[in-house]
Length: 589
Ligand code: GLY
Image 1 (spheres, protein in one colour):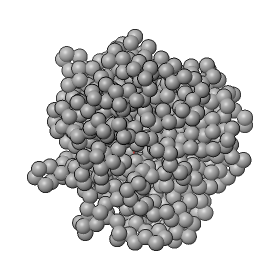
Image 2 (image 1 turned 135 degrees about the vertical axis):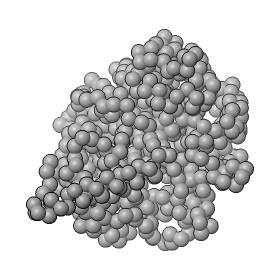
Image 3 (image 1 turned 90 degrees about the horizontal axis):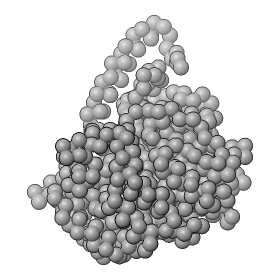
Image 4 (image 1 turned 30 degrees about the vertical axis):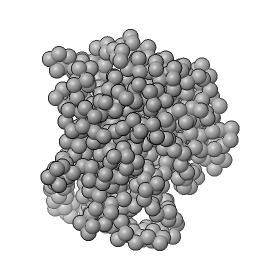
């Protein structure tokens, strides 16, 4: 695509100058962002759109999608397939999610036309205090030091969340859903290129002893691609959970093993207790839904900032229009400005609503009208300030200081009865805390809290640590409904705080730019998190970045490793798309 913004004479002068500005911006911005990179890129593989008449699953590894497909073929429900796929992901994509972590689950009940949203987010132990991530010297810990310590390990929520959803929406017995993962754990699975690459990049010395012994050979070399890796310890854990339910994890022998492991972490021990595990509950929360163009976009409320921020951006840009040409510079500019405004409010106001009065008026149309006035189609903000939604003074909340990275995965499923699940699932950083117990990794989700709990003015930061609180998330599992209340799209992605922009990209690309879902997923990632406008590294699109720089956007070209899994309903069939940046696949019948 070529964009001629300037007459030729002016171009000869301006373009080299802009190129210099872009290069300068990239260098500066990259230096500041080293601490919190999401899971790294490990190559791109072209994916074909999948088609099905009856059911479909899209997940981050072919073995996981296959396990889900098998359950759907046996008449299992969307949540049954999700559970089977998740257990396999825990084994074959251990860097991203598992029973040692948490999730947000959206369930669409087609018969009753009801959306249920379940918060299975990790919680801080009751012993946690606001200064959790400060050392004895009174200084804040380095981010990676905190990640690799026991202090980052929150009470895992995944199994309680899946159990809650299965009790209401499961069709097959709970125990049957663990069989595919148990078989693979016992017989071995082929180490994938992505798993091998991430282990190689991380290095053996970055893992606790149990994880090192599992992922690396005796010379500390990661198992090669294709190596048949067995995990008998995890197979045993899955058998226990299959037979005894989630209680085995939260109240049984496994609970004591988890507590003992966290207490004995070699770097800095953690403080997770048996009581923390025993009292953990998955919570049903009210969904967040907004109309956008001809559809309704629904997602997870706090402690996730996902749906609030996605919908905030969409509502800001809706009346402005994004044109029909994919990736046009004006649209990316307007989106970036909207994202700056939305992320500014996200940072100031969004956190666990059981502990913080998250303003209720963030999506009110009058408030959003006032925020939209701040978008100048011809000029970019460097950084947006938070606004003041109805009855809230921004000075009541401290300035956010959360650093975010991610080891996360997303599963989208539709079953033969038309029910749907959109679940984003995480252990936070790649390989979580990098400490393992009985064959599975423990999360480091508590580093999703702001380490600072008061800002420079002494104001309390919404996302600071408190006992029992759940850290703010960016996960944005989404279900889009059409005007007749039918499922139109099921989607979500990993990617830390960029998740919000990845999900927004697909919605805009499909509903505004009329791209098919695979092309929408493939499209280069872009978006601002109230800083530079990040644009995915690629050998193309220099014209676009120059045009955006011309509008005053600071551009940062980055690896932006989304893992979008999308299912859409079009012309009476299900279409599925998996992200070429990861190893996933959509399967159905
Ligand atoms: N750990 C990723 C997120 O919750 O946003």
